[in-house]
Amino acid sequence: MALFSFFKRSVTAFIKPAAAAALFVGALPALSDQAPAPALWKIEDEDSQIWLFGTVHVLDPTLQWRTDKVSQAFDAADTLITEAPTNDADQAAMQQLVFKYGVDQTGQSFLGQLSPEADANFTKVLQSLGQPEAAKANFAQLRPWLVGVTLQVLQIQAQGGTPDAGVDNVLWHEAKAKGKELAYFETLEEQMQVFGSLSREDELHFFEAGLKQMIEEPDLLNEIIALWVSGDSVTLGARMTETMVGMESLYDAMLTKRNQKWADEIKILMDGSGSYFIAVGAGHLAGETSVQELLKAHGITAMRQ
Image (cartoon, rainbow, N blue to C red; front, side):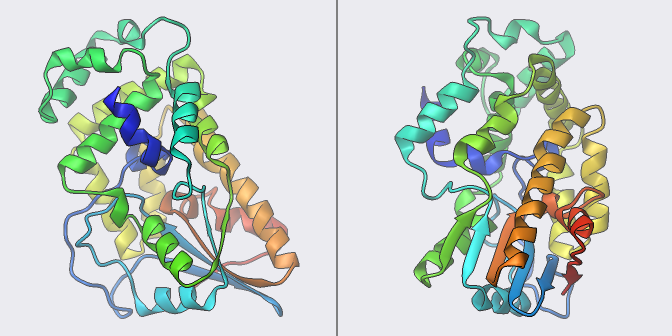
């Protein structure tokens, strides 16, 4: 199936909440440190320095998101920590993970379980992507979560976005070129399990809600990315929470539980020594259960730069 060749390289880059599964924005002017810019936080003690930077995984390559402040923090760090080793992924191993967690193993396609409204929305979304209704059959063997993510990705590509321009990807390649250490919070399988462990009911709800958002709020992704690029993490967190109403279990699995795990790991880093630049999806650094908020339980305060 042609979908597999695409996901072998990039599926894990898009595992995010429905509204942020694939973020894209049109070209914006270059940023300066005097203008609003993506948020950056710093944690430090006598022998440790850690910067927290929220990222977007898919971008228009013409978007200028970098500031001198971000570059200086990145250059000062010896280690780059991202979510998972997507750039180092073995294609055969990635395909196996997609098959394990993204292909329906029950033999019962989700297509027959869609509500009439969702089925109609599926047709509308496909048509907006230049695909006929008959294209639904191409997705019959996949699990609903993977189909939902695929449609988000296809929509982003249709608008000119690319994972190659994603912040994580850009920073990873720079870090490797500069000889920095590369580390990750999760394995590829752990990240795939975020969706792979969902119940069928939650998967279908995620898929149907995602279709509805794509139709009723076509500018939602642009709105969220605009909040990110302006550094308005408070409104960003609130907006993302709004998009996940009715999907609390999914929000907990994708954000809260992972954020708690990462906060615990950051505490361990602070107990040691070194300099780290942590680049994770912007949604993890926004809202009431953000990494920064959860760090407070460890007595650690992240200072906005």
